Structures are given as C-alpha cells and as structure tokens.
Image (cartoon, rainbow, N blue to C red; front, side, top):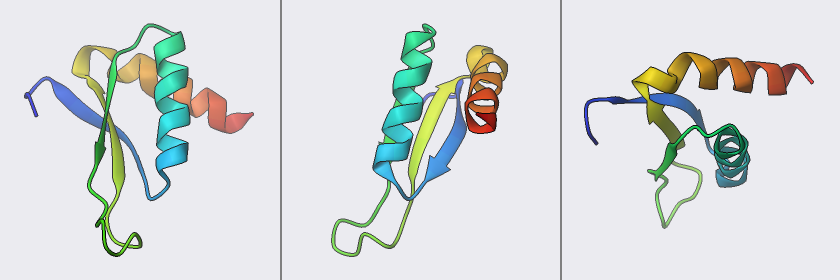
Length: 69
C-alpha cells in the first residue's frame, strides 16, 4: 500500500464496506477495499476501506453523516 492512503473504515462485513465504497464513489472519492479476512474461517480478520489522505476528512464527514441517518 502506498504511503498516501489511509484507513478510513473497517468491518467484518464485506457488504457494509462495499456500500461505503459506493457512497464515496458517488462523491468522486477514490477508495480501495482490502480484504484481510481468513478464507477458511470467516470470523477472523477485517475488510478495510482506504482513501487518499487528501480525501480523508471529506470521506469521514460523509460516513459520519450517513451513519446519523
């Protein structure tokens, strides 16, 4: 992972992370999903969403507003 990407969100639910990524894409914010869940035991690990550090504040605000709804 390049140094200008920062972790924005993490979850054990890949669907939840995909929803967040799509919401960010609608606002022209590039995001990368990194799935570090164990393929044998899906109860271990996390799916993480990364954004560029220049978009972090805007992305965090969007996620915070969506969780308030």
